[in-house]
Length: 607
Picture (tube, one colour):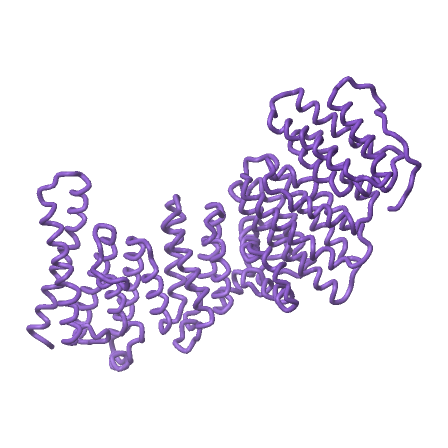
């Protein structure tokens, strides 16, 4: 707010012998005089001096004298600004630099944080809000390289929340410019935080203050501008929800009050649990930004889908959170159970939780529990009709399944591993059999873990068993089942075996790292061969002469030579590691020779 006072020199209201404070008085007085005369070079010298005090205090955080100096310098700076004779031109000039300088003191003590907040509040009250917003955003964006950056950004976040409320026009444009800066800085700073940091909670509380300010601004707007600002607020809330879960999710009880506060925004923003877990609410709000070519804004929303999915999981964890969000998780689960399309969409959204390496295992555990609830065995089986087309959902379903396999492989918790494997089976079973082969093929081809590949091949064998069981129905259905064509993926089952025996990258499988996968592939091949022989069928083509010769000459004989060579080479080596390798080949050798016998028998006595 424009005001003008007669120029005067500054003098402290108290006498001090501290040379640093005396030097500060000189700098401030000189600065005031020179700015009034049109020379602003002294501001840089003042800022350099203040920075030297903060740097020294940060470097010597256990030195009480240094900490005392920091408080005194901040306090005297604040007194200078409050001088009634200070000219508005001086205030305006200092507003460009001091917010950043005083924020560097914020992590030293609660007193330093309080004074830094007061100094920033002074500039907000005495300068143009439209000028202060970019100044504070620029200062916020200068966090990189700061020691304890999360302390530095705290007073700036509070300042932005207050200056937004002071802006009188073009609210949407101002908020839209500020939010990407805020979110990008929070994302970067959160990477330095852990749940044990006492500053962590304070940082998110201040970030919530910005959301409160945006909601208050919405009350001044109407029509399309109001809708767009609500979309900005929704995206901001979901991004903060993801960051909060990332940092504090391992301490659920401590996190719940803040999660509830964030969830309280959902009714105002028009967000529902069903829309969040299926992704429809996210798609609707982001369409606005894409349509208006807001690429810069979209880049700051890298965790928005994570936030949408985890918001529902928080409601699943706590009924109080669900109540704050105005939602009923039980109703959402029932709706998803009865609608396969929404179930596929929900699985696709949950992948953002499972694939996010840094998300706490405790939250992933609850996400797996939720997934088990929405893929319960009571779902209508007519959802698996062969005519059902889920091709547009296949990429997300595949990515979700791949993320679940990562949970299985890397979780340190046996209960999570067990439940994740059950969830994997249920999601696979929910995919129409006509399209399940591509999923299995992609998972096996891209698997980097031999034990995981073995598990997937065992699931293939289980599915084949179910198909075979269904085709041996008794009574009047027997002829009908016999004449029914096998699903396409069953006829291509041998392709999955070949992926292991003849890897896409060439050469035979290597041992011992691929031992689990090879054993599972041998068991799958033996199962197919024996099942087709016993049922006098050839759905997979395994009994054709061409395929028998291929299996014998291209799969089994090269594998036998490889295994025999390793066994012979190491038979006299008593090194424990070598002996473990040889022992791991014993079951492979056993099943391998049985497969060779079966193939030789079929070649000698074709059906």
